[in-house]
Amino acid sequence: MKLIALTTLLCFGIIVFGQEKTHHYNVNKNKLALDGWDPVSYFQTEPREGSSQFSYTYKGVVYYFASSKNKDAFKANPSKYLPEYGGWCAYAMGKTGEKVEVDPETYKIVDGKLYLFYNKFFTNTLDDWNENEANLKQNADQNWLNLK
Image (tube, rainbow, N blue to C red; front, side, top):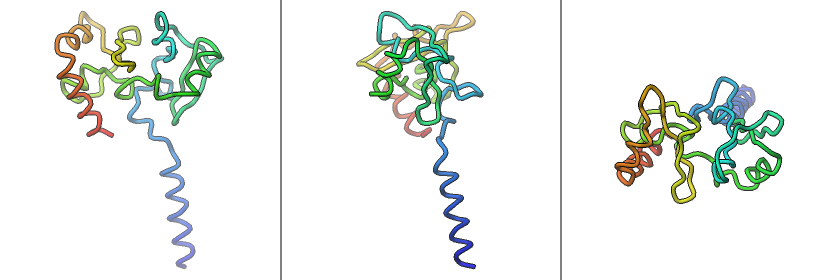
């Protein structure tokens, strides 16, 4: 009886802890991040849409790349290219600690990190971020830690 209970607990632990926690990431129903934009391309001349031909899954999240070269760069050092705050709006994370959708074409690179912003319906939160970046970033960092 004890062996059955132990086996059940072990299997449950493997199932629960073996699954990647993608709920913290801004992904669609297929677990695709950045609406399919290539995360490496943000650090090049300008962001580009990726292709399913060059897809890679990292920690349960799917990323598309514009080329095999970009895919290989990401695989070699994912943390260099991952957007901050799971790809949620940096301004909203700093202002209220909420997970807010982004426009993948509205972004900023700060100290080698990618920040994404909401930009719809005459509201571009990148403008608001730029007005108070230091405080918003500090708040966003703390809010993100509290969400994880």
